[in-house]
Length: 133
Image (cartoon, rainbow, N blue to C red; front, side, top):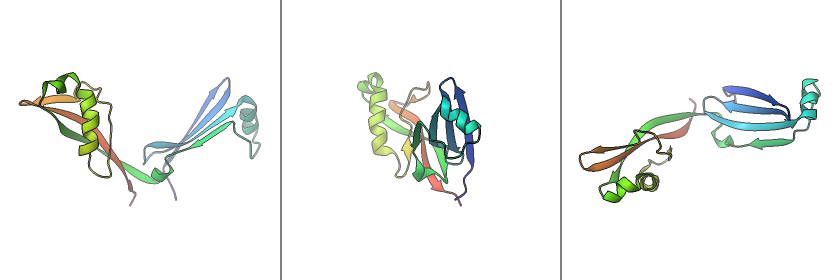
């Protein structure tokens, strides 16, 4: 499988961190941490150097493309909605989010909540990963 990969090398006094990112899927899926000795070994082109820490995650999304779109949903009418709108929206999005999509549940933007008439609404972004055609 070919992917649209991006590589990041971050140096500090403790060594180096290497991150690999799939640009189409918009995820980082590999993180490697090398101590200063291992960093020197790699920079001197020593093959098969051990790493201090290796993490791999999100492999089910590698090679896919992330789609995202705005999504709005009704939060409710009661006075309690005004006082606890963030907590209520986090619970409600679990019920109304379309199948196969994941919702951002931060709701911390200025325009995350709005009113239309007497009804309180929330807005967020939803995303999903689809195969690249």
